[in-house]
Every structure is written in C-alpha cells, then in structure tokens.
Image (cartoon, rainbow, N blue to C red; front, side, top):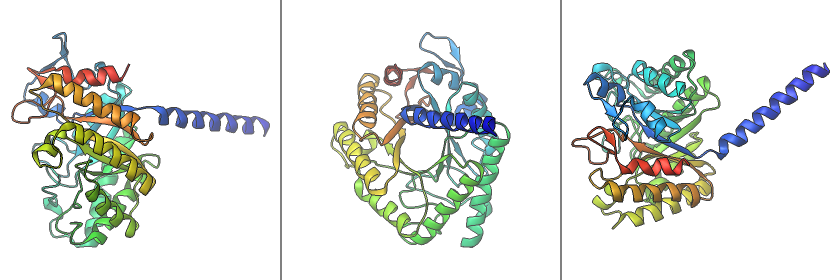
Length: 338
C-alpha cells in the first residue's frame, strides 16, 4: 500500500510539474493546412539556404513549436478532410510540435462573410444539426486519437463573428441556437480529448464590440468554451477602416485581450495573423510587435501567435514566402523562439 501511495504521489507531482511547464510555454505556430495540396501540385519548398524542405520540417527549423490544421466536412478533392488532416498531424507530432484542430463545419471556407452548411446537412433540423456536428467532431478527433495524435487545442468554428452553420446558427438572428451548436461541439471535443482547450475564434481582435456581442451571448445561453481565439490582421483592419495604421491594431488588440480575459475568465490566443508579403522588412517588424504585445502586454493571458498560411504565394497578399522560400517575415518567429 505504501508503495502504491508513493507512486501516486510521484505521478501527481509529475502532472503538476508538466502543467506548470506547459503554461509557461509561449506558442509560436502556423496554419499549414494547405501543405498536402501544394505537394499534390508539385510545389517544392526551400529553406533560407535554398535546400529542399517539407513544410512542417521547415516550420520547425524556423523556430515554431505548434501547427494549426483546418477540417472541412466533405471537401472536393479531399484536401482538409479528416484523413488529410491525419497525414499532416502525424508529421507535426513526429517533430514534437503541438497541434491545434480548426473545425470549419463546412465543406469549404468558413469565415465572417460565409458560414455555409455542409451539403449533406442542408435539410437538417436544429436537433439533427447538433447531432451531425457532434458526430463529425467526434469521428475526426477519434481518428486522430486512435492514431496516437495528441491534440492540445480545438476550435469549434472558424471566425464565428456572427455564428456558424447559417442561417440556423447565425448569431444575430438566433444566438440561442448558435450557443447550442457551440456547446454541442464543446461536449464532443471533451468526450475524446478531455484535456484539450476548446477555442471560440473571432476576427478583428481590435474591435471590442464584436467580442462582447458573441461572448455575452454564449454566456447568456450557457455555451462552454475554454479559450478565446483571435485574428490579428493589420492589413484588413486598415482596409476596412477599423484602424488607420498597424500600430493601432497592435495597441488595441492587446488591450482587448486584457479586457476579455478578465471579463470572461478565460485565456486567449492569436490563432491567425499575417502581414503584406510584398513588404517583408516592414512585415517582420509588425510580426515582432504582435508577438511582443501578445507575450508581454496581455497580463500573461495570451499564450501564443500563429501565422496563417505563410507558404502561400500568388493572389493571397499576406503570405510570408517568396519563390517558395521564407522571407524576413518568418525571422520574427525565429528570433522570438530564442
């Protein structure tokens, strides 16, 4: 009996030490969900020295310690399906990188402009929709867990500034149903990964009003969440006239994170950010300031910064690569990791 008690004490101490250590980590990550699609198109990425590199390995070399992967329900071509996510999650885990799973609950992109119901769910009632959402969440996470993948964070929806699964879960029309769908996702996550942090993610982190609207509503209807995820894009804030320059975005997003962490009693994370690819020197400065603000100006309540799709080039203006190589923008992460 004494030996058993001693072993239990040692296990408990180990868990406590792990938790304390984990909480002290500042996560530097990237959403590289498009990796396998780029590979299928024959795109080869290179490190700064010009050597061929797989994307996940390249992120690790740049100093990142976490990866974010999106999930679509029935995507054309299979990219961002649960099976595709498993392929990329295995690579991240092999490199000892933490993993965030981002459920869009759509067959394609979900964001503040569109939150389309998956085609297979189109005629579902609210009750059926909650069951379908929970089933999709559970099946995806079980696939990962049964293949030995550890998931640290799970987003229930992507940039759900006005809810998701429109029109049923549109927050301005039916906050109660949006909250119910969110809570169904929360319960499904905890069923598979009890220790994973469940994130609700909104855009425009500098805009306090949209955060109050959504999170007051979720609290009113008793939807559960563990963490608030935010998008920080100075480029779009200026474009939509929320801010006049990037300094305003940095100042105001940090102030909002301090405020909402206190108001709702949860931690926060910058789960998406990006700067203009064509201005890499300025971009590096901006990303350094975003990381610094998140790390040092949120009263300790922001736990990381993730760059969205750094490897993307072409029409998308906010990547961090040029000619398939990382630009100076990614040096901000490398320097922050030291």
